[in-house]
Image (cartoon, rainbow, N blue to C red; front, side, top):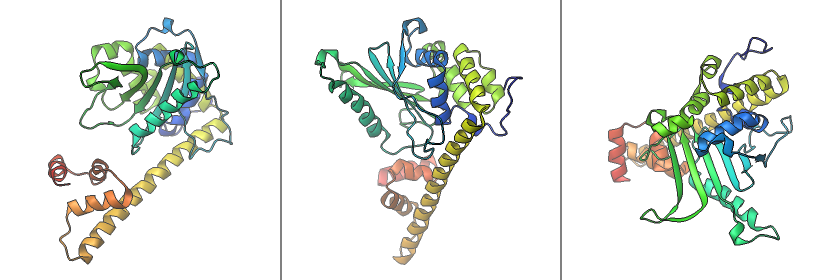
Length: 298
């Protein structure tokens, strides 16, 4: 942190930008940082961003439920486009369906006005910033999904889904690097303050300034800590559930006199915990060879 900062955190993990509460705080408070991030994500010059309205501002106090609050950023850009940005730092089953519901809800909200006309419908872009790969068989640094036919002809430009994979910076194109996306990805994945402060990007520096101000306030620092603990609790519960699924799978195999097989355990995880085949195999940390064999059999 800066030399004048009254607080130096003993741990960086809860005060990094991957803490979605801090993410919301920083980009709803610092318009320069938000403008820079939007410019990179949308591939548009900052000079073209005339106005940004934050549609879901929050009061950062003890009334926030740090366990369940959904902390996306709902923005109205230039009064003619809706941008929904969400930081997703853990795998969420049926993620694509979830984002579809959120984005379509924003479409629906536009139609509820008494003066609404179909030709006044404004585009909605849902942007996910993820620390994992959404589609393992289609790994890309920054992907943009739109409504098009099987020949690529666009049906409508009113609904789009963008995904930034923070783990795939090596796959960034020259254009994405020029946009500043890699620098922003580095800001999100930094492991300490020195890494963040070494990034030569004006927008990132603005974000860092606001992070320092937020972390200097004990009440807001406590909220960030609580949010991080809530995330760790969730991860711990999921780990316990997976172990329970493994134990039940083994017990079931012994009870029926069958040889204990990885295939049976994967099926048990899928049935008892509702995991997808990929999630079950990931939980078991299976090798690529085992994954291929099971994919052919399941």
